[in-house]
Image 1 (cartoon, rainbow, N blue to C red):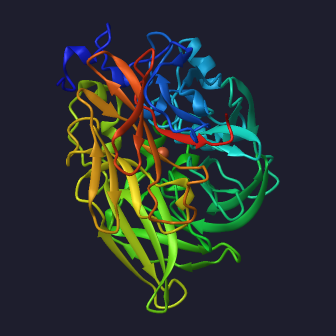
Image 2: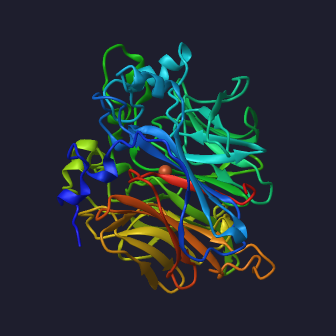
Image 3: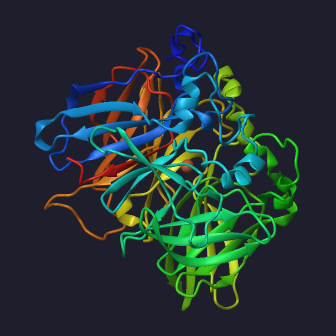
Amino acid sequence: MSDVNSESQRNTEGTPLGFHSLREEARTELPVEGTLPEWLDGALIRNGPGAFGLDDAEVDHWFDGLAMLYRFGFGGDSNTITYRNRFLRTDAYTRALTGQPEGGFATGESTLRERIVGALIRDPYDNTNVITERIGDRYLAFTETPRWVEFDPDTLSTERHVQYEKSGPSGQIACAHMKRDPATGTLINLETEFGRPSQYHVYELLAPTERRSIASVPVERPSYLHSFALTPNYVVITEFPFDVNPLSFFKPGRQGPFIDNFQWRPDEGTRFLVIDRDSGDVVAEPVSDPCFGFHHVNAFERTVEGATELVLDLETVPNPDGIGSLALSELRSGELGEQAGTLTRFSITDPRGQTSIDRIELFDGGTSLPTVSAAQWLDQHRYVYAQGTDQPMTEWPRRVLKIDVEDGSHQEFTRPGTQFGEPLFVPRSDEESVDGDSATDDGVVLTVGLNHDDARSRLYVLDGQTMREQAVATLPHAVPFDFHGRYFPELA
Ligand SMILES: [Fe+2]
């Protein structure tokens, strides 16, 4: 089996394939080995950094790579997969074409000051490489700014920028991960406005540019927020103690890349702002031990001994030190040594009374990019899917995990020489499907694995119950490790 530093894993320039620049845009039918379920007739659209520059000039950090979309279309009973990949034609892409790639996260050209103050005089950064979502009948790509890019979900061609007309509360940076409320079908998001005072604005998206304000919460030192938690009645903002003094960037002078402005202040602990979705009031602010994290996996409400309990599953790390290890130079060196994520459950009891908070680890191995079935969002889930890594993380994940959070057991899938991206569970959707059962694992898990032995990525379709390979399709190239996908059942 090859390892992360072997020659077979590098392209002709010596760059590891997981972090090389894929400049080829392909459109093809993929031969399928095995059998696809007949009910699987939608499309998986993934998003991630496809290239780190379009010539010799490159960004510094994995998070700053140019947005590339990947579409896997399933044909129902035809047992074929259509595949295409395309860059989003963003302003960031145009800059990269001219040899001036810019990064919005950790590449030196883009300061927090420019991001905040500059947003008033120029369009916000638009390298929307994190995830895609459907709003109504429109499909958009997102990053951590409130400027989105609409694309055609069939051809992946870039359509237009979408930006909220600022007639109401809005901020200069946004969470990349919105949360969809299955009860209404609408998306809810969070933006941070830097100013006097700085505020978190929580809103519901009624259309791409139409919002309903849920809450505006003043904050002295805004935290870095990649996602948040949503339950049927509450929005919970997890304020990791990795925050910024907003006054610092109103002073002139260079302050370095966006993320370098945030300071780790562990003495503050991790504060959970529990916001009532109806009134917009902060009803509780419990504090737990200091930690950091990017991803809220899922959250739900339940009643325990007559008291309301909010349950939040997050992937946490002890501190934000790992952000630096995701710099391209570090990743390409193959010398990872950072703490892997830990699947962590926070339980907030009695948020309107004698509030208390409890924290437990749900799984003792390293995880990355954890997900739950979209059918269980805001509901009590049993299974979490994630990339599996050693702890500490010495190499990119080689395992696909299915974790049973009720009994702590897990199943895993591996393939020789292969490292995996985010797994997504797609629930079975035919007359045999089970509706509303949190224990159901009847469906498939979709995940892209990069095989270093033949320098090709493959889409794996795993049986959700056994985690065994049900079908696999080989792509025409090696896909750099990406971020997040969405399965859209309505796209045939
Ligand atoms: Fe993310």
